[in-house]
Amino acid sequence: MSPSLAPDVRVRHSDDVVARLIEGELLIVPLMSGVGDLEDELYTLNETGRAIWEKLDGSRTIDDVAREMAREFDVAEETARLDVANLVEELLGRKILVAG
Amino acid sequence: MPADGAPPDSHFAAGNALEISGEQLQELLDAVLSRGRPLRFRARGFSMGPLVQDRDVITISPLAGRRPGTGDIIACRLRPSRRLVVHRVRAVRSDGLLVQGDSAFLPDGMIPLGDVLGLLTLAERDGVVIYRTRHNHPAIVRHLAWMVRRWRNRAASVAHRLRERWFSPG
Image: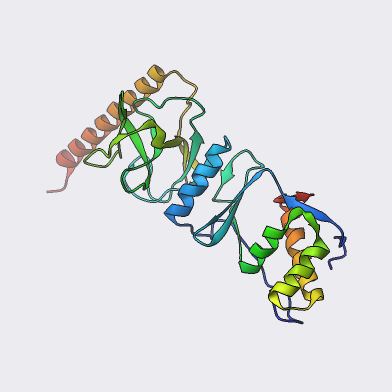
């Protein structure tokens, strides 16, 4: 687990983003600046990123999400924890996720 | 997710390197405008030239209760294809708007107001603003501004042709 992120932290999607699964691709557009800007601020997540995203609903801790990911993707829990923490930190940094 | 022991892969891709389809753009436009926010994206196509050219960056803003008028440039869905276009309102009728690209020979047809997604409020080329409209101006002011721009463009075009004719070599 990343040292700056406690395992019992809960996070959820920011209210200030638009996220849509379109043609099999999850597209995320932040609206924090007041404008949806596909030129400078359009994000997409790959398959595992998408699976993590769907679990980040504010009800599960980071550790819960990592355990579910380890089970679903058949990887070691420690690997899943690192993966989830990295993505959560990245999305928190961009304010796409907020504390739950 | 990587195999055990491998470094985590990147789940994340960002920025203008992402290419999205017309369908994806239309859904995102719908979603963002319905939240009352404008959407800025790169336009593709030539139908609004010379004002808006292929790969210019445009901003579409929500209607927010405003009714588009003649000369406004709107984002709308065409029927029956539901294709998204950003074209100019040529006439306002009781059953909708007559819409046409500036460089198109024919209008797209009548567009019901329900198929209008938003208004073009800004266009940029290479980081420079090339078009900006203030939709809080009364419709008559916007219409007059469009007429002036239209006649100014026509005059420039005629002057260009005359210059070519008079000063062409040989």
